[in-house]
Structure formats: C-alpha cells, structure tokens
Image 1 (spheres, rainbow, N blue to C red):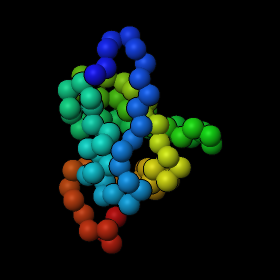
Image 2 (image 1 turned 90 degrees about the horizontal axis):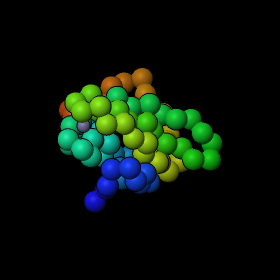
Image 3 (image 1 turned 135 degrees about the vertical axis):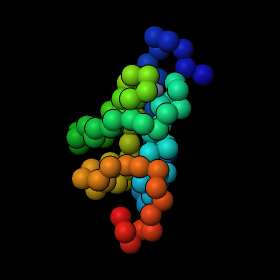
Image 4 (image 1 turned 120 degrees about the horizontal axis):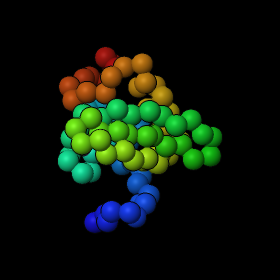
Length: 91
Ligand SMILES: [Zn+2]
C-alpha cells in the first residue's frame, strides 16, 4: 500500500512482447485504476522509465522499465496504446 508523501519505486510489469492493451493495463493509474493515461518515455541510458499522467485524476508517476520494456515502448510510440487486442502481425 502506498502512502501519500512516500516516493515508491514502481517497476513496470508487462513483458517485452505483450500486446498494447496489456502494456496499457500495466501502466494504468494506481489511484483510480483508469487506463486513460498520457505516457512519455524518458530516454535515459542507464535508468529507462516512463512518465505516466492519469487523464482521470491527474496522478503523475514514474514507472521504471527494463531495457526490453523501454524498447517495447519506443517501438509503440508512434501509435496510441489502447485496449483493443490486435494480432501481433498487425502491430
Ligand atoms: Zn487516476
């Protein structure tokens, strides 16, 4: 359980090959559980992370990524993450 004022280190839980909908769900807002978030990949070589801002409640947080997850999001960046499952060939 998170307490206000404490900075918790959050680590993304999606797998590198997950579909966009699963990636999005793993980045969903922990406060209101909304998956309607703005995300931005923070491009640092040592500590890749993604900054997530909830469009519902405004919760802003940084989620840390593995190198593979960062690559996954970098490849995703031109397209919106949404909840529609797609066949991998269509990604
Ligand atoms: Zn929220």
